[in-house]
Image 1 (tube, rainbow, N blue to C red):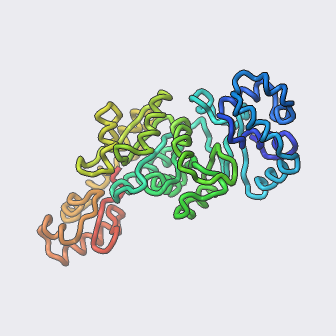
Image 2 (image 1 turned 90 degrees about the vertical axis):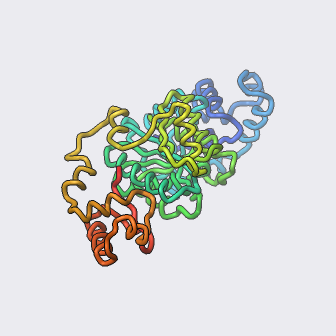
Image 3 (image 1 turned 135 degrees about the vertical axis):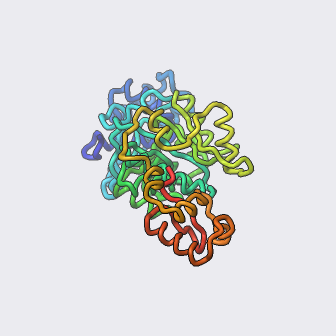
Length: 371
């Protein structure tokens, strides 16, 4: 792990943050020169003889070499002051999963604590403009996976990504967010609370150096890292053309299993996931089957649904059976159950106290812990 102390890490920061070269070309140069400091001080005539660099790339490297030692030191000090660390290629902390993907990142800047990469990991991605159903599913899946000791990898985006990581944090498990900007920038700004929680109890990382703005072109590239860090990728909701499907394509290219949560055929946010299933992706139907297929099934005391069946009285079971992850109104439940208003309200209150249902907004209810 690079901790930004001394000259070695000053030059490592410089090489890792060089925009003009791909990760694999940086790795080639590191191998060729032995260390980043030697590359930084290489003469123009030496660079001219490097066959893997085209003319434009050689110019960019030379332009980057024009940064003074003082400028490199200031960049280093900024990282120290803001708790930004770097793990670069060949460091012990560099994720082994990324070493053999196409165009692996040379370095990863991060804040927080890197996950234990020897643990199994699942990437969870999906639509930013997700449905309430999708958000609830993502939260519950993230929570259950993290509780089972699985690292949850996502992108901290609005919608599905953020929901999955909130769930993982709620369980006290491990989660890692791959950003499409510098790790000193919270994007989207609406996820600032989540960003702070990830730094405190998880990790945010990026191949882009600090101060890098969240440009649209960065996000498709960061998706290869999300899939690369994941043993399995799970898409919760996605439109037919979306960044989530780009991540799924990367996962397939990397030889990873891809799963999708099925959705209603008329929902735009489920067209992409249903398409993935039609094309052969695994179907996520419940957590136990998913864990078994990942070969990390842990026997629990008893299935949550079984506990509900044992503990619920007849009226409670009747009302509970009318609920799922789609919010149902009090009026709908009155019609479906045939119960009087007073009895229904009392039964709903009991189910809420027992933790089996939740009132998502005034007089609208869903099941909780469905997976």
